[in-house]
Length: 117
Image 1: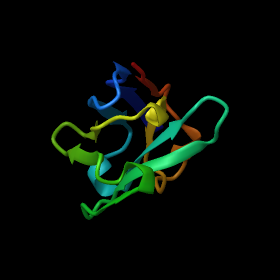
Image 2 (image 1 turned 60 degrees about the horizontal axis):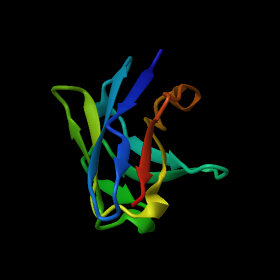
Image 3 (image 1 turned 180 degrees about the vertical axis):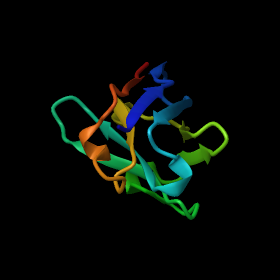
Image 4 (image 1 turned 30 degrees about the vertical axis):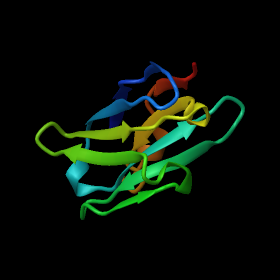
């Protein structure tokens, strides 16, 4: 059974940076596309960034040029570097491997990111 553990969130001022980490068991990240999602209070969970097994990436328009998704294969960990954070980035951030069978039924607890002065 695949499990995801997100970490690295916190409170940061507008313009600041954070790096989120996603560790997993039951899956080898390098073999599958891995994605970061976020869910703000009262809103649906949205896709933020995707890293495909080929190494190609895709980003939501709202984070392009500010966020960077990457992977450390040796650590089986995926990261989300978030720069120039804005208050609208405030949300709980989750990672998942959406094309791995059954993965989207196994969400982690997420990590809270709050951008506020």
